[in-house]
Image (cartoon, rainbow, N blue to C red; front, side, top):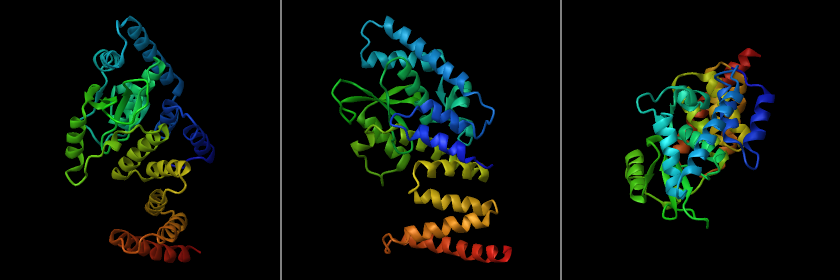
Length: 294
């Protein structure tokens, strides 16, 4: 799968804009899997859902933060039937917005995108929380800005929009990451829309690599590098994916650049040294292959 420079430029312009449209960005990503996708019909469906929530909010007696969440949850999870996909963890459709809207199930970050976009259309502010291993949401509980759970409501889009306390978040982190990762309240800070888009892409890339779908993984890596050309791990991965696809010249170029840029780091980091040794072996093999091709 080759991704065109025009597609990369279009995606980058939207995703890196001051206030990127999450739905449009996510549907562009989905076009890599569904080239003939008509994004407009899914944007229309989000508009319809947003209008339905707005109508219900207008009928709500208090329309405070808690009631907004209750209305959102009742509509999205009870009425429309959205739910977290707990049984199938290796399905690309769980990471693609059109499929999530069609099937009404997906991963936490994709259900969060649906929640954020429907809420936005209903005039409700909901923000993303880039929590490790499990994307969360945050709804401002009062008008003055604050970054932590004691001021805002933390919502789990994967589990029916459940409201989580700080203790719940601590338990969630421990269950996902183990005791070696200590809880820090900064983990509950709002994230940017660009970071949400990057998380969608990283999830997809990891899945494609796990599935040995290297052309798709390479295309996703191209988008990640367009968003952040300094992302050395993506440069490395693009090189390794090119290697698996027998594009030896590109693989050599990327892996040599990765070693050149990252060798300036801490020479005492054993993990990095071991990784560099492995990449260096790839580079030596690639140099021989490229020389034979010439």
